Amino acid sequence: MKIDPNARYVKTHEWARKEGDLFVIGISDYAQSTLSDIVYVELPEVEDEVISGEQFGVVESVKAAADVFASLSGEVVAINEALEDAPEVVNSDAFGEGWLIKIKASDETEWDALLTPEDYAKVIEAEAE
Amino acid sequence: MAEPLIYELSVPGREGAKPPQLDVPPAELPVDLLREELPLPEASEVDVVRHFTRLSHLNYSLDEGMYPLGSCTMKYNPKVNEVAARMPGFTGLHPLQSEETVQGALYLMYHLQEAIQKIGGFAGVTLQPAAGAHGELTGVLIMQKYHLDRGETQRDTILVPDSAHGTNPASTNMCGLRTVQVPSDERGNVDLDALQSLVGEHVVGLMLTNPNTLGLFDENLEEIIALVHGCGGLVYGDGANMSALLGVMRPGEAGIDVMHFNLHKTFSTPHGGGGPGSGPVGVVERLVDFLPGPVVAQDAELSDDEAPYFTFVTPPKSIGPVKSFWGHFGVLARAHTYIRMLGDEGMKRVAEHAVLNANYLLSRIKDVYPLPYDRICMHEFVVAGHFAEAPGVRALDIAKRLIDYGLHPPTNYFPLIVHEALMMEPTETESQQSIDAYADILLKIAEEARTHPEVLHDAPHHTPVRRLDEVRAARQPVLRYRREA
Image (cartoon, rainbow over all chains, first blue to last red):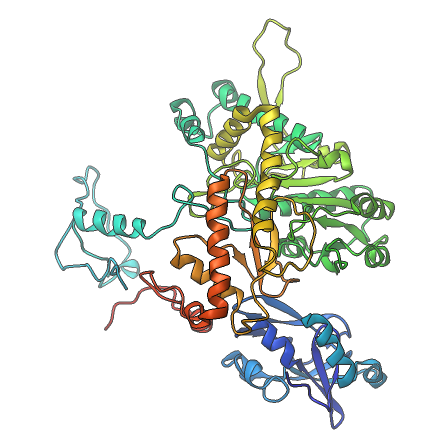
């Protein structure tokens, strides 16, 4: 199971990564593997507000539809439009091409409260048992 | 594919039915509605009958064997239900007939309302909702209107445990309310500490499935209800399946304020493709005035020697009708028959055997199939469909392999809180022999998973259509036939 060492995490299996003055948000490799084949991704619109801990989209697989939660609050500045035609990219590259949204954070200190890659590894380990 | 499409059987010019001679003057159709071509299949009567008969042979039904879909309650549907529902006095009725000419039907509806009230411990019942989720919608609308009627307009949130049916948050959303999820604790109960932190004056109510979708009776039911009532909220009982509680516990007396009952599950009416469903809703005294209208009432003005007279009444603060006419009457007739045939004692035996059968099946397989919440179950249970010794095998592979043995798979991948969930509900109508046969095959498949995992990956082997490409079906759905150009 891959864990991006440069990202921070939340217990609901979303990651966030700082890129310039923006934050990129996606679901973890563990999340995509648990969901199995992803068939549909529903994302907010650009300029929508997302609130940390609240749902901003849905990832649907052949097994289940899962809500995705924002790891930080802020304004959506980009969504990954490629996922509309190719949702399977979330399966093949969850930390890269399979990103979901980019936001301008309203409070960058929220980043510090997120789980480190080491802590997130423990969350996965506990869940897999 | 073993059986061609009816379009593929089509031969130009062949016909099976002729419309009757025109007995009214012909009318011209508007030109913009006329089509050059109407690509309907052309087939003879015998072609059509054979085609659909062959398709029906590919079906699997309750009349053929065990159907242990957890949460779906595929119990046997007694044939006497059909006899009652097909009585000409019922089938010949028209929904616009006057009250005095449909007293027999109203008698049946009234007594079904009474029976559901008695079973659930409720003060009033509506028979209108057309299915379980429709009953939920009705129940949430009633809860919402109750709070609005009291001027508590700030209540906008429904609490839903993470083990709930997906319809709970959907019903909430349909009413314009917010859903907040309540986690489960390590025993599969609602997490009381989490619930404590979530209740407040913004809460419309909690939607509680008990037994929950893990088949477990919540050990803290009283505390949960007290917490929700304590903040002024109401408790909705998702009674999709009441089999484990019939004649044993009345939810209304335990503090559940609203509850829907699925007649097509607990009360043995046809289900799935054989429906339609029916989802009556029972409420406690303080919510009776909000029920959808009309409900059937008995005229109290009559003396003892007169025949009772039944009439439609709309409750004073009703949320309004939720279904045209009177609900799915044919289904009500079947459920009423089921209840009358069983009687009070029979009801209780249903519950006892539903629970006994589930625990028997569980005890036969639990040493092999991992059990995430190891407790005595109610009418159903959830095991994990994966084995440490066969890491490549998933619940879906096991489900598909069961089809090869001529058995219907259990529910899989639900509830979501169990990885690789297999949810099994044998129901009370299965004998020990049929449950043993099912358990034997489950154990055999677990053995195959260790020794020949590829047999499971490639299953089903013996069906007209092999493993379906669910991913492609979801990503590129082709929902209708188009004739090749």
